[in-house]
Length: 253
Image (cartoon, rainbow, N blue to C red):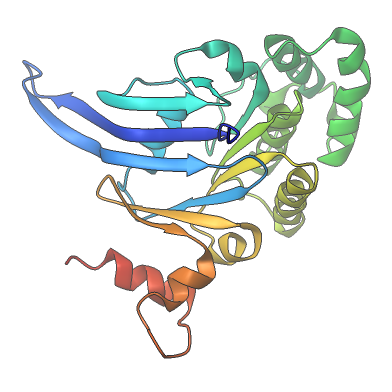
């Protein structure tokens, strides 16, 4: 029997009600079927309002599908126990600003069931990795956006997750911060972990991702390797750039 994927979406539909009486609906996802295999880095890309954020919310049990089935780490997404094995980097963090960086990591470590004796060693190691060891005891309220983004990466790794979801992780980071994100993705792959990368930085998608899923208007327009995508519209000719391939794919039929 084949191993269950790290994440799976089967004919998933998500409608949002609109209007005063909530009678109208807007369809954010339309019959989405998608698998994320264990140990792969999947790039999730698409234009604005394509449905990427909705898909991530469903994967993380922050929202429920209108219909269809979602599995996370071999269990229905409604089973929140698997969330302790997931790490998530949001593009806009909303951490309690009165906490210190060290206290925040201990807090999230406890939420994800990491033993205290493990946290004693892992917290300083992660703060060192994201270049915040010297600011460990300062309130987050005094941190810059880039510092908060790096702290968010440490928070997502505190439980050594089997599935790491990165939503625009390079937003607000300087060059060294962006290199930290790239090395983190590569390290997770080497460790046999799964990464879902949501990004508009096509160079990162092309260099880091084993496969990509392209969403547009709530539907999966493409799911496969970057090389296949770049050649898909040019049979018998040399491959086009990823940017040109996406522009072609985004064009209305």
